[in-house]
Amino acid sequence: MSTQEPPVSIPSPEVITIVELSKRLKIRRRSAYDLASEPGFPVLNLGGRGARIIWTDALDWLRKNKGGIAQ
Image (cartoon, rainbow, N blue to C red; front, side, top):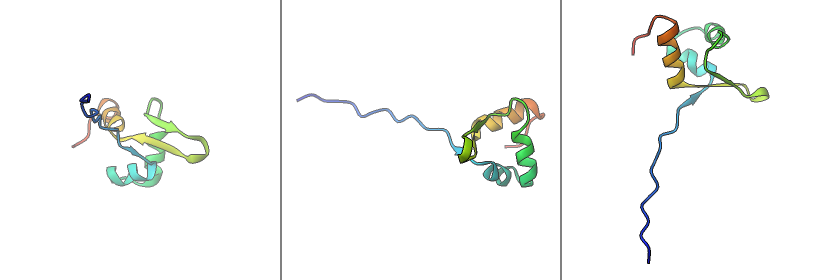
């Protein structure tokens, strides 16, 4: 009988849509789409399935490129 350690749980990043981004940042939907189209913004284009954003990457990008945001 062998004893195995349980697998280590690695937290997965929270993936959101552009509409969810607008709600979290409390900005207009059009502004969120404009933000997502900025060069270097961390958006994952999934073709016909739309675009997705890793929330923590978006926050990091905003802090570095837009002068910081409140947490």
